[in-house]
Image (cartoon, rainbow, N blue to C red; front, side, top):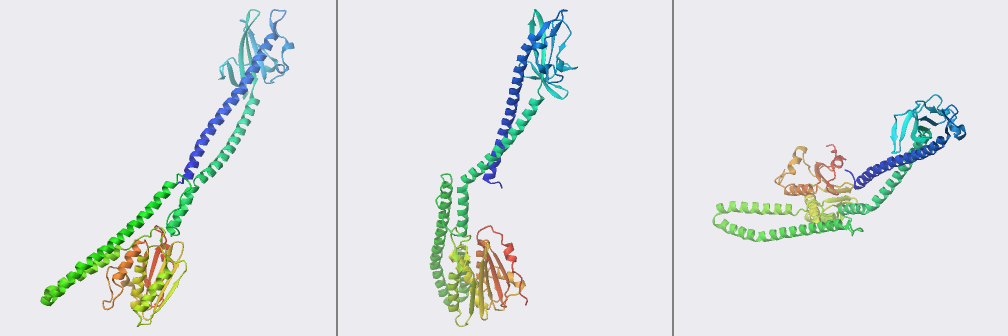
Length: 460
């Protein structure tokens, strides 16, 4: 998944590259055209000077008066050349610089609209200009050429220099773009960090944003959090009202069944069983519905305080057995959810452990960056490996003569499932059963690695 910054930077690079390419091509073309215009103007001026040097000799022929000819036209292959033809005479007169060569009358690449041609002579670029004059009543055709290889090499150096400047400019612009975008997205990054704090329970709402574009997002998130809290509160209140309202008709029904029991016991017994089944079913479903599930943002219940209360309750309930209940919790261990769910979860597990323990129960827990790892172990008879799955089934008991390890385990399983956690039953090092819970700090975390850590059973 690409980030906004990556997308903006990619678009900026592509657009800037296209603009720089257009700039470089345009710069090269204008630079070359300017240089050729200069050469063309120079050839035009030289044509008029050479026209003055063309004169008729004593024999009636035509010659060049060297007095008016620049020295570069006298030096062989100097890079400056001319040739001319007068009237209908097929003979061409050549500058000494041409040596044994001649300027082609046709061919080459047209340059501009001033009659210039660019052609290759001995792998060198020549710029050729043709002029037609009238002198002494006769038509004079003149071709002038200039070797522009030194201009082309100079233009190439300028183009590469321009490319280097463009590359440096592009790099500077990209760096500036990254800094500008990063500064512009800083508000979103800040909101992302605050959302993470919201997930972890450090804050209950997002603080106000410092930019107008992000403020609507923060407002809607805070509104959503408030709506979730209000909806959960209304749901729990409605369930409480339902439970309270259902008790009255069930109580009346039980009294009618008791009255019928004295008159017709054989008819009252099925009704009493169905009434008890209805009451148990309603209680179980209400308890399941009260499970909050994934924690609302900002909810964090530290374990030690709640566990101390439950331990005192267990000592009071089992005061005749002198049970030793040890707690080993890290200071940072917390439950990422609702207090009622924590009490339901720990209460059932601790109650089961106390009922089956001989003399000792241990509760240990630790918190890492992924989850809460909670373990409740006892020194009771334990449960065989092939029977542990049955404990997680709804209402299943392995020993009907003793309460515990029944409906409470199904409630525990439901709470763990609602919170996206993992539940594992294994043999405890104390000799009995150890229940291990893994509850993620936030939804979506993978707990497989944590579940397999230190999960080997102690030897029998």
